[in-house]
Length: 159
Image (tube, rainbow, N blue to C red; front, side):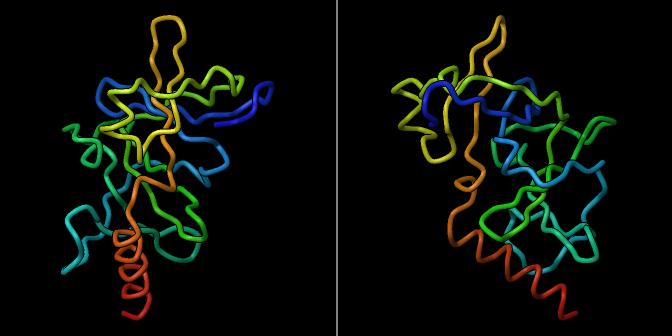
């Protein structure tokens, strides 16, 4: 959470029918969908690798991560996230907008949700008829998963 009075910029995206957001400081780039090159022997959450800026970036389908089934469509995008020195691309159904909100508009999740998904959530923004769930990108993956992502990229670089 942020101190009151600060403005926060959020990249809002859709996964299924739900809108989610990540702070813009955690987003490096938004790419058009391209099918990842699969890697044998990698964990199920890793879809493969895509080329990016002279190297490769691991792709994780956030739709699967958030338990939402969705086919790849015209608006499917890859959001390249900068996570503490590591890049990961998250597949989403669509990028909706960059939204500016006051930090005070980001409410903590309700108590029931806190227990179920606290590790992923920063808070919730309620505007008009919209409820936008704000994710903490650095917490979407466990330490073990981040190590697996790092190994996949290293393995691809050595191949």
